[in-house]
Amino acid sequence: MNSSTANTDKTRITIAYGDGIGPSIMQATLRVLEAAGARIEAEVIEIGEQVYLRGNPNGIANSAWDSLRSTRVFLKAPITTPQGSGYKSLNVSTRKALGLYANVRPCVAYAPFVPTRHPTMDVVIVRENEEDLYAGIEHRQTEEVYQCLKLITRPGCERIVRYAFEYARQQNRKRVTCFVKDNIMKMTDGLFHQVFNEIGAQYPDIARDSMIVDIGAARLADTPERFDVIVMPNLYGDILSDVAAQIAGSVGMAGSANIGDQCAMFEAIHGSAPDLAGQDIANPSGLLHGAIQMLLHIGQADVAVRIHNAWLRTLEEGLHTADIYREGLSFQKLGTQAFADAVIARLGKMPEILKPASYENSGPLTLPPVVRQKPKKKELVGVDVFLQWNGGLPEQLGQSLKPHAAAQLPLQLITNRGVKVWPQGFPETFCVDHWRCRFKTPAELVSFEDVLALQVRLHEAGFDVVKTENLYNFDGEPGFAAVHG
Ligand code: NAD
Image (cartoon, rainbow, N blue to C red; front, side, top):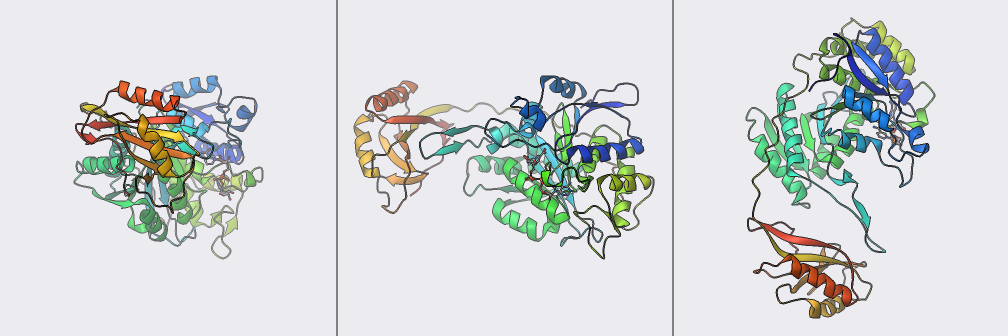
């Protein structure tokens, strides 16, 4: 990956001051970067709350995209997304528009200088950044039911899992763990898990294991020192990286790198903390860590090491912002800018107790392109028709649907919120107004015309068809979840 350079030694980057505590922690971070001799030339763009409130639902002007696509390196302070359905999350759209598929979030304890119950914790969360429930495809389908589509793709899984193993190898880490919920989401999380096993097998030098995300999260919160690198789909990674940062010491300390093939964005993992805005008390360390990751990415490991070691030394001397300040442990409580001054004053010094920063192996990873799989034989074998129906008991729905089914598309079953209610459902099952009616035979293939004709018949009979999902086999394997019960 190349970032553009303005002259022989300065790398152009794009920066945004953000909202809430953003401007203050960005100012502190830039002062440290400048004092440490970072060879950067920053272009400022405006994003966030003011842009949204001027009527731009994306929170970013078109001219700002030009800067991002030209520099391809973005150091971003947190922004506030106004409440309300009209505003799109700028963070999500930036990650997706620029193809920043890997979100790397190191969460490290700095005991005994920063209080934590997990003094040896050193975990890196590699979060998939573009897919999952963050596709933003949501629909209200009936009076009572809303839906959010969870999209997991094979290329998406392959890219993030490969990134996690390549990162582990580059950083000399020993184990990659995968968190999924494939006991429930057998197809989507099941694919993530399967790809983890396939790609992990190509890295015999790195141990691997996987956990169901609920017990994985419990163990991460209880004994994070047992983990090394953890790779997860988007939502679990979003939640658990905040948990990991907080138990390491403070959510205000962890940085985040969002990496794509063409561009990269660096930020703190926390948000704009409006409760702390304008008071000069926020910890700038999260954004500073994002900036350190940026320096490594643009080939300035010398500056990154200098800043990191000065920062470690500042912590060791008990110079702490309010979020990590503890009476008796800390020496002095500092505001945001004073903390930056303390780091600047220690540039060139090394920590005496904490492990010094070492970035011998750093810089962008070069991943092989994803090889698309050979297409499988795809056959239409039925259809799930989703209805809004307020008519009464499942048995009545089953009986009134049956006459409209065709010989090659008989009504096989009906579920409500995924539970089979016909035939032979339980009277105890609570039902809403959203019914999934599966039309298929075990043996026959059907045509798309059969499916369309079925919908027309149902519509003409007065049924409210809210959506359909075609049922396909791929090389004879069902491409849809079985219904139990
Ligand atoms: P938040 O992360 O902004 O803050 C939660 C709490 O964590 C704060 O109240 C504060 O006590 C603490 N905290 C956070 N950063 C800190 C720091 N640097 N120093 C000390 N303490 C710190 O989460 P929130 O309050 O849920 O969200 C506020 C806004 O931030 C929302 O509008 C949200 O959409 C936005 N947000 C933005 C980003 C981003 O830009 N990347 C990420 C998350 C949330």
